Length: 497
Image (cartoon, rainbow, N blue to C red; front, top):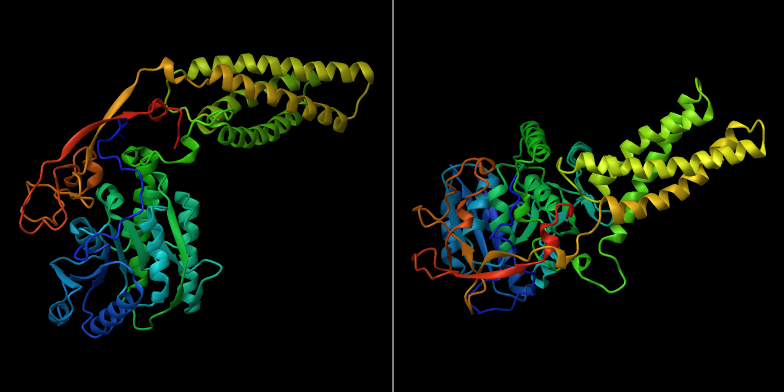
């Protein structure tokens, strides 16, 4: 995994301007395969809806995935009849491949897609893209599993959908509620950095994109939708489910092994209020307190379990010392990783040694409490011992947090660290919609890397940029390279976000 800051870091989110009349703000992609029957009514209905309700310029792009029927002819006819409609044909199948290709070449700042059957009610389209236009969110998804969603579908599909999302939550720690609803949108500046990391070209494309975005700290907005199942759907459930499970395993393995360069997206905007310096509010204190309390609660339960076990064959003082020692080692390791975000093996031994000093202080407190209890009562009950130990551990916990924060894992002050700068490409004035492009390939839609995981350092999206609408005629501009100061906290290895 890369540890340096990427020059492709995203700029701060801003509300998108209305722009010129000829520049679409929204590009809705409809991936199709052998949809000669449903394509025309779908496009006409979507076009009419956008014409009457969407306040910005828009485009509808038909992405034909190597159809073998008359779908290409229908798409060409719609393109000729409607000024806002474009068609594009791929010679290979795959919904993910179609979305990556069209989104990568689009000049619209907001990119969306929906299934051709229009199972999702179109009234959710404006709420879907509004948070992206306003700069509030990075991606947006329609959710059929939200409490306020209104869904009509069979029990079989309902069971499969909910089971799949439970698998995602259990295996990849996903927090979004619906990965496979064919109704999503993304900001183009996010897509150009995120898409090179997404390997899948089929139905798992959505899930992989969302998991990586969530792990990188991007904001995903969910919109409850009204959704009616299409009984004529051509999706092969068994094959799709098998491919999805393979994708879950692959992405989980990549995340666990650290082979994904998510640092390109981590802390991308610099507009997180938790990053701001606020007087009298220690930086990161609230998050550290929550993490420390969780670790402390689990450590206390672990300690009490150990004490009960050791008490079976030893006296109270020995049982307390052994239980406290084992739990202290586990507590220091957990707090090092989870509370204070320190990764790697650097200073691990030093931190454990300092943790043992903190353990010694806790031992004095708890042992002193037991000594006081034994002095007050010659034969205290086991429940009384546990109550005294809990009280003593609470006091020791407060002191442990203060020592961890101030001594074991201290915050390094800004003036103690050298200033760092990173290079970033800044769009030229009056050209807000720039997307990256690799000039070494004849087809602007081709991704030269079959497996982005194998090439985390150089993808076609990190190369020369071109202005919106210039893909066809290959007219180029010079990218302006500026150096921007990077806050010292951005390079702090203990910052997990």
